[in-house]
Length: 145
Image (cartoon, rainbow, N blue to C red; front, side, top):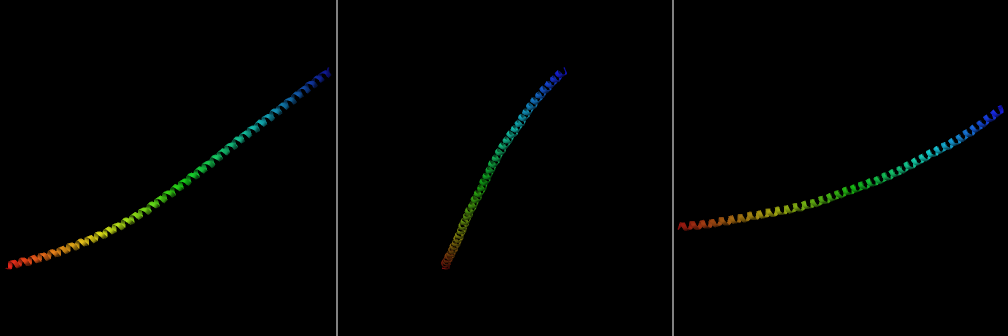
């Protein structure tokens, strides 16, 4: 009976050994599947992260271009405003010079007119004085008679 017991024990040991080998093989396969799933998850995460990085880089580039375009437009608007202001200043200065010349011309004409009026008034006063003298002489001549 010992032989039979040993044979049964050997059979049981071999069965258990096969079962353990099958379990180990299944666990290895399961471990390999878990490792591959983990690598796939890592790859998917890296792909998503790289996609997001590319999107963010594109967004940054677009925003930078937009900002540069706005800065350029702003600089152009400032230059245009400065040029317009300078043109207006030049026009206003020309207007001021023209008005000053006209004012000085009018002042000179007014002074000439005033002098002419003064001369005319002086001439008229002299004529009136002569007329008074002539009338006085006539009056005196008429009263002396």
